[in-house]
Amino acid sequence: MAIMMSLRRTTSAALVACTALLLPLAPAAGAADRPGPRSAEEAVSGLLDGIRQDPARLDAFLRAMPKGGDLHNHLSGAVSTELLIRLAAQDGLCIDSVTLASATGPCQGTLRPAQDALAEGEFRTQVIRAWSMQDFTPGAESGHDHFFATFGKFGEASWRHPGTMLAEVTDTMAAQHQSYLETMLTPSSVGVAALAAEVGFDPDFAALRQKLLAGGRMQALVDGARTDLDTAMAEYQATEQCGTAQARPGCSVTVRIQSQASRASTPARVFAQLLLGMELASQDERFVAVNLVQPEDYQSSLDNYQLQMEMLDFLRPLYPKAHITLHAGELVPGLVKPSDLAFHIRQAVLTGHAERIGHGVDVTHEDDSAELLRTLAERKVLVEVPLTSNAQILQVEGQEHPFPLYRKYGVPTALATDDPGVERIDITHEYVRAARTYGLSYPELKDLARNSLEYGFVAGRSLWRDRDGFKPVPECQGRTLGAENPTPKCAALLAASPKAALEWKQEGAFRAFEASVLHLQ
Image (cartoon, rainbow, N blue to C red; front, side, top):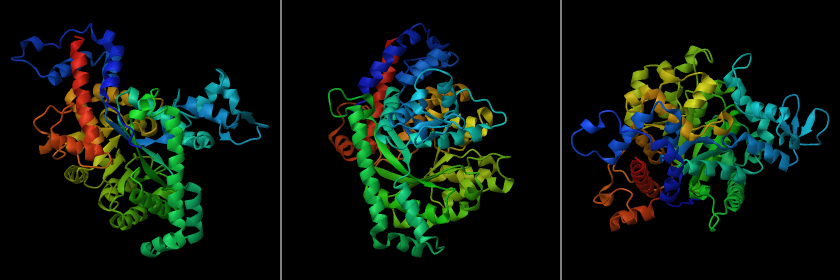
C-alpha cells in the first residue's frame, strides 16, 4: 500500500494555478532594508506575510505548499457527500424522505430511490444538508448533534466501496501536496461483535484475551480483515489506475490504517475490537494503530473510560508493534459534568499509552493542566488538531482553542481534517485557518507539515536526529535535504525506511515550492 512517487511534478503543476495570484505582489514591507541576502525560506515567509489578509492569494499559496500527511481521518466522513449519494444510487439504495437516512430496498412508502438525489433539486439539497454540515446553523439541533447524526444517515451508503472512497480522498490529498494518510476503519465489524457477544466480558483481561484467541476465531477475523483490505486496495488501485501510464494523483499517497474500536459499545466488544486491532498491527504493516471512536460524551463512553484505558494498559506490552492514538478531550463545559473534564487526556497518555491525542480541546479543564502540558511536551505526545471540526462540534475556535497553548508549552501539533466530507472542507482550509487566526509564519507551517510525517506511524527510522529542530541524521548531512543525489549512506537509509523516504521527498518538495514561488516574483 506504500504507493509513492516524487512530489516534485505535482508541486510544480499546482503552482501554475496560483501564478496569476502571486505575481502582482510587491516584496514584503521592509524587505529591501534587511542586510545581506535572505534564504529562500525567509523570502517566502516575507511573501506569506504580505498576503496573509488576502483570502484568494493565501489560499493559492497554501494549496500549493507541501503539507505532509493527515493523521486524523475517518474514511466514511472524509469522502464527499456527493460521492456517497452516487454510491447509494449505484447500489440501488433508498433514502427516507422524512429522516433522510439511507436504507436498503425496496424503495416504497417514504423510501425514495437514492437515484432521485443525483439530479439537482430540493431533494438533493436536503440530503446534502442532512449528510453534512452544509448550510448548518445551530438552533434546536446543536452542531455536535447534527455532526454525529450524519454518520447514521449516510451509514448504509458508506461501507460497500472503501476502495472508491479512498481513491477520492487520496486524489484530494495529492492535489494539495500531501503524501501520507492514516485513515480509520472498523475491521471485521460484524464478526468481532458476534465473537464478543458470545464470549462475554471478563474483568480478568488475560483470561478474556485467551477466550477470544481460543479456537482460532480471532485469527480468522484477522485473516478476514486482511482479505477485506486486499479487496479494498484492489478496488482503489483499479479506480486510480495505479502502475499504469494513466495513474491518478492519489497513487502517490502512502496509506496506512488505524483500527477503530467503538467506545460506546459493551466492554466485551471494545476489548475484542482493540485486541483485533493489536493483532492486525502485529501481522500486517498496513494496519498501524488502534483508536477509540464515537462521541466521548456518550454516557457509556464516560462510564467505561477508565476501564478502556486499563484495557490498553494491559494490551500494549503484549503488542509492541501496535501504536496507539486516541480521541481524548473532545469535550467542553456544559457537554459533560465538570468531573468528566478533569482526567481524560492524562489517562489516555499515562494509562492508555497514547502516542498521539486527537482533539485535546478540554486540556485547560484537566486537573493541574500546566503539569499535564509539560508531560505532553516531555513525552513528545503529538496533538492532532482539526480546527474546523472543533468549531463545528464544540463551538471552540480562535483564541478559545488550546492550539496556541499547546504550542506555547512545546507540545508537538499537526493540523488534521477529521471528517472533511462531513465538514465540507479540505486540509488547505485548515492551514489557511491556522495561518490567519494564529499568525503562523511559513517556517511554523512547514514544521506542522513535518510533524505530520514525523509522528505518523509509517515504519522505519526518521530522517531527523530527534524531534527538536528537525536536524538530519548524520547519514544525511552534507547534501541539500531532498536533493536527488543523497550520499550513499543517506540513500541506504531512504531505501530501508519508508518514513525517512517520505520526509526526504517532502524536503525536496519544500525546496521546489519555494523556488517556484520566488521565481514568480
